[in-house]
Every structure is written in structure tokens, then in C-alpha cells.
Amino acid sequence: MNNVKKLTALTRAGIIESLQFRLGTAMTLFGNLIYLALVYFLWKAIYESSGTDVVNGMTFYDTMIYLILATAIFNFLEMFIVWDMSRAIQSGEIIMHLLKPMKYRLYTFWSYSGSHVTLFFLTLVPTFVVVSVLTKGSVPVGWNLLTFMVSLVLALIINFNLEMLVAPICLYTESTWGINIVKETIVLLLSGATIPLAFFPETLRRIVDLLPFRAVYDIPLTILLKKGGTDTLQGLLPMLGIQLAWCVALTILGNLFWNHAVKRITVNGG
Image 1: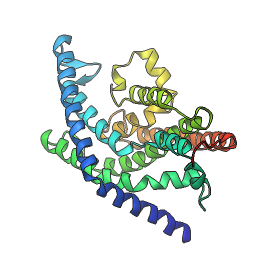
Image 2 (image 1 turned 90 degrees about the vertical axis):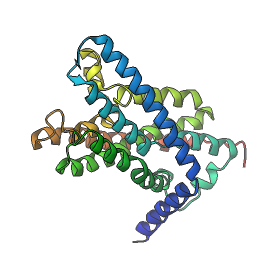
Image 3 (image 1 turned 45 degrees about the horizontal axis):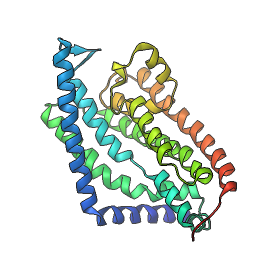
Image 4 (image 1 turned 60 degrees about the vertical axis):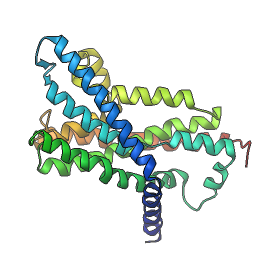
């Protein structure tokens, strides 16, 4: 019960902090509108130059729905763990985190939970409602919403573990700016967040299917839009099984790497 109180306290603090910096949230939403406008004109040009209404099984309409929802999910899942850890190491604050009566990984995960709750209601839900209204019900509404929520939680855990696989590199280099940029580029590209995986060449698609990145964006979106046979139990369970398997595997790898890396800590500030 004490652990539950600690975790809910972290979530509540995160919500308060997120609402405190409302201008930052507003600027993020404004930046996303500009990004979506660029995406719209880019893909409109691609479809017009293709000479066909359907490319790789997706219409322009399907592609825009996919990418708009992917952007909303990206905002919901976004974490700055690598940046936070790098600054904490450089300032010496990392020692204070390690002395807290809670494991660092657990504390880090739940310290972001409040912002996830806030962004869920401020970005993901409104985006879903707007898309559903403007497309006149093109996004299915039913049991897929419940399974999508389950998939989204698994995606959140996977994304956290990917962050925690990169963040401890700070303990060796004391700076991971370049590494983090590369990581974000790879995740966004190979997860389907910037380009739907349906547009990938077959060989590359097979490789991507073996990597954890598609479990962050493509699988939740596939479940939400009832694509790939996920409207049936036989098609849904393998998708959720892939996510669950990556949750377990990346959690184990992340713990092992963190336990090894934390022994190399050096503090220059504080």
C-alpha cells in the first residue's frame, strides 16, 4: 500500500508540473500543427506524382489518418530521459536520485506518468475525436479502443526501456546528444511514426518486423484501425504477444545494462 501511495504521489506531481507549464504544452501543440501541415503537403505531392489513388494498399486518406494518429501517440509517449540523465550526471544531481528510497528506473518511469496522463487527455483524445468527426467514422469505434489502450500501455513500457537502454551511456560518455538524436531518428523511422511500414520495401519490412520499434507505433495503430486482421482474436493476440515479449526482453536487458553502467558513475558537479 505504501508503494502505491508513492507511485500515485509521483503521478499527481507529474500532472501538476505538466499543467504548470501550459505555455510549453501549447507551443508543442502549435509545432505539431505545423508538422502535420508539412506532412499533408508532402504526401499530397507524393500521391499526385504517383498517378494512382492507392499506393502500397493505402490511399492518401488512409495515410493521413495513420500519420496524424501516429503524431498524437508520439506526443503521448515522448520522454526526455536521456537528456535528463545527461544533465543530472553533469551537475552531480544523479547522486541525489540514486540515494532516494526507490529504485532509479522505477522512480524515473513513474515520474513521467503524470505528464503521460496529461498528454493523453490534451493531445491523444482530442486528436482521435477530431479525426473521427472529420473522417465521418473512418476510425472504428468499439472493442478496438480497449485493446488499443492495452497496446498503448505496452508501447509506453517498450519506449521507456528503449530510452533506458540509451540513457546509461551517459555514465560512460557524460554526454549523449548525438547518440540520442540517432536513436530518435531510428525509432521514428523504423516504428512507422514518420512513414507507414506499408511503404517499406519487402526486405526491409521483414527486418523491421524482427525489431522492437514497430511495437511502439505501428502495432497500436494497426490495432486501433483494425488493420492486419486485428479485428479478430486470432489476429490480435499475436500483435499483443509481440509487444509483451519485447516488454519482458527489453526490461531484462535494461536492468542488466543499468546495473552494470551505474558502477561506472563519476560526478563532476554537485
